Image (cartoon, rainbow, N blue to C red; front, top):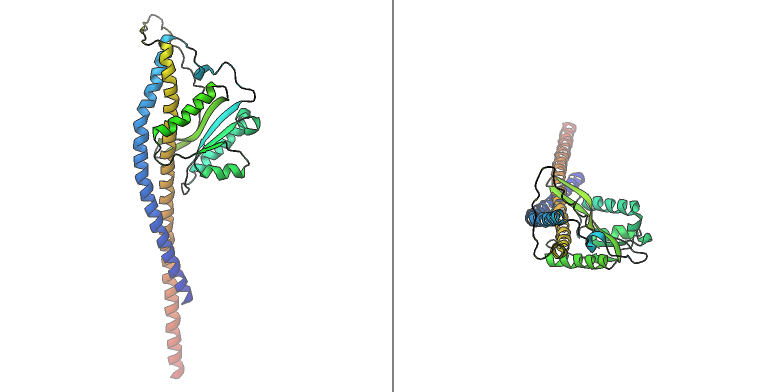
Length: 295
């Protein structure tokens, strides 16, 4: 009797867990749909800004700019700045682990990115703080953006990086995040935010014609406006991709947990039926044996 009672308690506990994970799966699915919509909505703008910069460099030639070539001189001991994008909450499967493994591999493979060589590490999300603290990796700043970051929040961070890079305080700015490709594929990526890789100038094809543009304002002034906008849009797109990837990972993890809880409940129900059947058989055997003894 005690065994069946114990199994019944476990069935009830597993059922409660399944209801919780199912609810979390539904919430993650809803958040994923909204985050995906926001990320896809900003992608055309980001690609459009890059296209403008490419077109400008291709028609106006290579124009020098601090965000491309860097400042005239970097400060002594300056290193790279690395921004790692993690989540504030857990229960999202291998999402944070993949991003943090990529970050540690990058820090080990690039000496100037390591804090021991003047590198600076900044973090988004609470889950990466414990991991980096355990690995004795100092974090210079932690940013909190939430599930629905406004462009103004990311713009302030990007503007800070632009100012620090232009002043020579950091030699480069890289972002480590989970890039969203599709609902079935997300890959951790190291994105070079600064210096921007200059697009190659467009050469005149043999026997072809290249359109000539007259810029107003001048090309250099246009580039001065487009490059900061490109940096800000790129960082915002990386943050949006990271949020979508987090919700996908949580949705998949909660679905897996729900399915496992369902399988466990079926297994426990089968064990309960067997234990109950064995108990009834034992009781019947005792009744028959007692009746035979009295006969």
